[in-house]
Image (cartoon, rainbow, N blue to C red; front, side, top):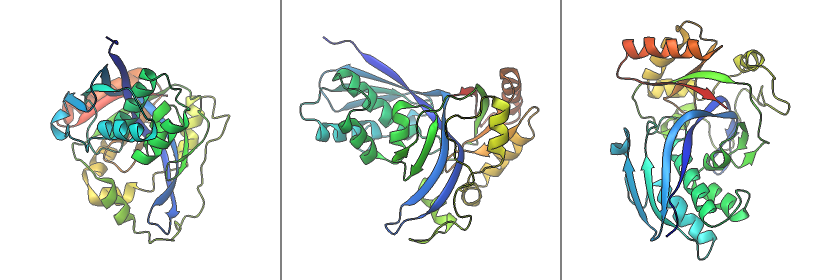
Length: 294
């Protein structure tokens, strides 16, 4: 009997996010600098009969174990791409908040693809794996390798992996699930319409800034175009950003993705942990996680 396989599904953090415009088919094109956190979900695969999924963890109650779950969707789509795919039973430990702007579902789907690739002896660069990732969802391709890079288009255009300096961060979710579609509707772009801001003001290319301080300065000149519409949809995002901005040692506070998770960057681990303790004391109902981004 083959041994159980396991992998982590790290949280995706959009350090910057520009919406370039809305295509005629309705999809929005973006330019986003993405990093990955040291916190995330965990996914296991026990080789054998396919099609089963168990979920545990602090956010398990909000997820279905049916075919609409992105882990099972990933398995099903990859099976369509590769005849005779070996599979098995999945067990997901859900530690990331649901519909929170840090790619939890996409990271889980990408983790499923990685495990299936390992079980079937496939490299992550295999065309079928890349095709399956694109079919599952816009954030799945960038989560497949889970390495810092720029993503463009509707998520299908990936820049080369970037070697980041150590970034000490604090992730905060105010406990409100935010679906992506209402946020994009609130942005208000019509099909075929470009963003009033024009071309992106910031795109990271190799070599990236060599120090955390230089990178934070560069990031401070950018933003997240979805922050304002997301705050209109979920005002709690504004509370989280205000709390992070007021944290001692905070160098930059911003929303990730379409919300509601926000992040702050600090100079060192001690400052991020101290800020986390203060927030947990003041808002014990929030999800608060100090971490490092890579």
